[in-house]
Structure formats: C-alpha cells, structure tokens
Image (cartoon, rainbow, N blue to C red; front, side, top):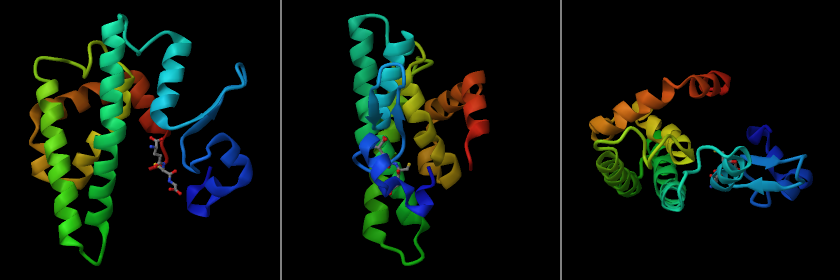
Length: 172
Ligand SMILES: N[C@@H](CCC(=O)N[C@@H](CS)C(=O)NCC(=O)O)C(=O)O
C-alpha cells in the first residue's frame, strides 16, 4: 500500500479500511477485515491467545493502555512531529502538542516505575506504544527523552527478537 501515491483512497482498499488509512487486515481464515491498529492487535492477540492479558483484570488493563495510546500518545506524537517539521512555524500548535506529549510521557514513566512492561506481561499495549514513544529519540527533545523509565522500556522492547525483526522490515 503506497500511501504517498494515494492508494489508500482506492475503492477496493476502502472496502477493508473505510477510513482510508493503514494498517488494515483481511483474515482469509475467518473472512474478517479490520482497520485501526488497536482493533487489529486485539483481534490478532485473541487469535493466537497471547499478548492480550491472562486474567480479566489483565485484559482490561491492557485494553485501557491500548486505548490510551490510540487516543493520546499516538495522535499527540504525530502532531508534535508534524508541527516541528513545518518550515512555516506555528508556535501555538507546536507548544500545545509538545506540552501534551510531555505530560503523556510523564504518565507512562510513572506507570513503568517498577514494571518491565506497561500492563503486566509484554502485551499489545507495549507493541502499540513503543513506536510512538520511540519517536522521541528521533525528535531528540530532552523534555521527552528525560524519562528514564520510558527510555529503558523502549530499549527493553526493541531488544526483543521479534520486535527487532519487525523494525528491520520497516521501510524507514
Ligand atoms: N488510528 C489509526 C491511525 C492510522 C493512520 O493514521 N495511518 C496513517 C499512516 S501511519 C495513514 O494511513 N495515512 C494516510 C492518510 O492519512 O491518507 C490506527 O491506529 O490505525
């Protein structure tokens, strides 16, 4: 799917992903098609019986942090990256999104105090959040990177063999 060429707007893709964005999946075994990375992760975790939490409480905590990422960390880091990259600066927007990202990093840092992963064992909540938190290292702003628990957690995650393989497959 070449989003640079606008393929996400083509009718066949919109049947799978009505919002016209990636990622999206079509499971040929079940016939289920899904968009939204959080829903996709939940579907795959249920399918393989892993990474979604063991007990009911675990599963809801994983779901809670997955939603936190989908509605907070991901969108805010996306906006931080967008406004910082603009040639024509929009200081109000840059400050607004950066301040919210810094606040979210604080929330995550506190959650990770004394924990290896966000919600119990390694889960889809970690899988969803690591790439966006890792963007802090690309942005290189100390107000984000000065969160020791978050930075150690990123390193812990990217050292996982499957994560390293996924990163090696990514185009950029
Ligand atoms: N909330 C969605 C966000 C998906 C999203 O923003 N995808 C971007 C790429 S990372 C996209 O498809 N952009 C193409 C476009 O907006 O036309 C999810 O988590 O799956």
